[in-house]
Amino acid sequence: MTALPEQFDEATCRQPEFRPRRPDFGERYVPTLWESGIPHEPLSEVSRRWDRAVVLCRHCPVLNLCAQYADGLIERGLKVDGVIAGVRPELPKVQMSCRGCGVPLYPRQSTIRPAGCKREYASATCRSCWDANHNGRSHGARPRAP
Image (tube, rainbow, N blue to C red):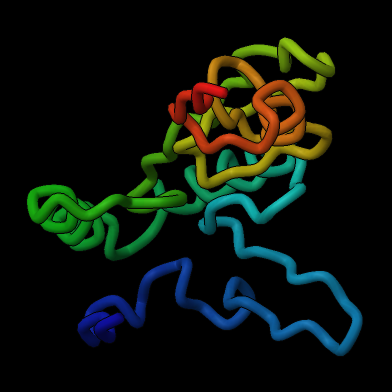
């Protein structure tokens, strides 16, 4: 990751009170207001953090510079994860429940893993139920003839 230009030093998100704090041994990592969700963080917490980050961004002295930076990332085809330039990504929707065990599933491509949900593996099933119903065959494999 390249360092940001000096002009970003004045950004609200770069001020000491908002910098990430290294957790002590045994402590859980606490993401900054701008970061994407961490595994098992409830979506309501992620949403609350992002709402606060958006408000702080609106009053940031380098908001326009940040918006140009974000546009440059998007133009180069890079994914922006978390809040940048006062814009927050959409939270993943829990689309369905597993057809096998009924647990809520989140989309395969999501970087956020909501608490109490499993990742969709295939055809609206979690990995455990897929494996149980397909006798360990890989995704899309056909059974061998006897």
